[in-house]
Image (cartoon, rainbow, N blue to C red; front, side, top):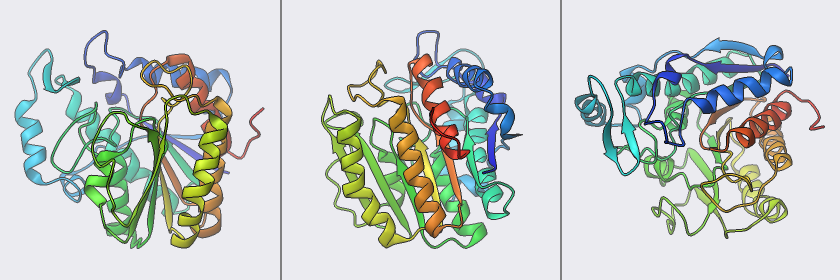
Length: 310
């Protein structure tokens, strides 16, 4: 398998304070772990472009872009919402994060890679159509999905989100859209407390109680996601890859292990292989214990590259 690895130095320049868990150190931890494992050298590495206004406004109104730009500080930090802060480089980093998924979609449609991992930040899956929240400014995976439809004619896009938090932003943007299937697993009840009871026809919700382990996670995914994905037969599979459901992550209470991230990635690849000519693009979401994050992404990339877990 040819796996592309997309990132950009600008993603390091966004920060929200020295004690904030969504830190540039997250990308450093991923890079160091993959280098030590000899995996990064086997990927096709590239820089992520900045998403254009045209690409962003497929999922966010122009007023959202202007509102964020109006808040951009000349120096220091500004609080947007709860614990979502912005520094002078935040919006450029966010544009590169969204642009990575756009570039990844182009790569798999042009057969330049079998699959893609976007090692970018800020994350995106909490960003709603017109609201930044949950460390997120633009909804990266939604921008990629909209690009697949607009540029490559995709009519069945599957978005699989295995972050510990529900992808409220992705649901807000694509709710009841028959061309987008959203499968989301998450700890419940838990942040973001929105769309938890949605009855949208295109959303498969897999809530898990605090303390749920890998076996419970796998049973629920097999029960909820696989039948829906087989029926939907997606033309491209997009992953919102969060690693904060691990038992050692400090922000939540699920109990997944490294092997579970390998397993869920293989399941997504199986769907992409069967229905989407291998087309799969993954983008980083959560994961806040640096060691656990590096190990989780290592397991994720091993699966993407067709390597055994051990």
